[in-house]
Image 1 (tube, helix red, strand yellow):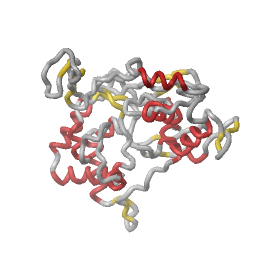
Image 2: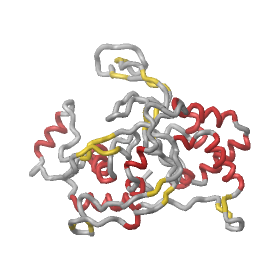
Image 3: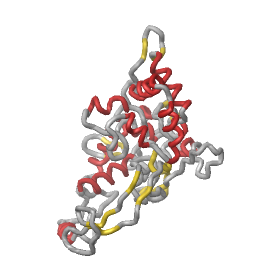
Length: 313
C-alpha cells in the first residue's frame, strides 16, 4: 500500500540491518536478508525498502520506476523508455521523440514524491476509551501474534530519524529550490508498521521454463506456442537484485484491516491471490511455516482473536 512510505524511508539503515540474520545465527528459522539497490541519482548502492522484493531504495525512485515500467513515462531518473529488443515499434517511437526530454518534469515528479511520502497511516480500531486500552479480543490477538512467531518478520515498531528533504529539492506547485530542508513531520517519530523491510524465503518452487500450447501440451513453434514457467506456493522464480525467486519483502501491516473497506474486491499478498487475511496466513511457508502451523493448530477463539488484531490495524 501507499500509506506511511515516508516514515519507512526515514528509518535508519542501521536500525533495519539490526534485524538482518542472513545465516540464521540465532537458529530461530528466520533469516532476514537485505536487498541493496542502486540509487540512480546519488550514484551509490543503498538499502532496498520498497517494492515486493525490496528493489527500490527510495520513494522517489520507486515512483519514477513505476512511471517508466507501468505507464511508459520517462523521467530524469529513468530517461530511456521501457522498450525491449523484442518490441521494434516501441523502439521506433522512442527514437522519434522530438527532443529526448523526459516526459515528466522534475517538479511534477517531486510533487508525486511529496504526496507519496506524506500519505498518512489510519488510526487503529478496537480502542476502548473507557479502559484506556484495546478491547480484550484485540489484546488476545496481539498476544497470539507474538506467541505464534509472526513478529519475527513483522517487527512491530521503529523510530524514525531525520527525514531528509527530496534529492530533487524543496517543491511547490511550480519550482524546485535547493538545498532541500528536512521534513519535520516525518522525523523523530515512533512508528508501528509491523515489518522489518527485509527479504524472507516464503517457500515454494518453480519448474524450468518450457514451451506449451494454451492447453498445456508441449510444443516447439507456432503462434500458440508460448514459454511457460509453472510455480508452486508463493514462488515466482524471478530474481530481482539480491532477491531470489522464493524471497519477498515483509509487507507492512498497518492499514491491513481497511484494505477491503477501501476496495471490497481487493485481495492480499503480492499478487492479490488471497481473498481474506486468513487465506494470506495459510499461504505462508518457508521461514513462516512454523508461525502458520501455530495459527492452524490454535483454538478457533484464538484464531479469531488474531484475525481481530490484524483487522484492527
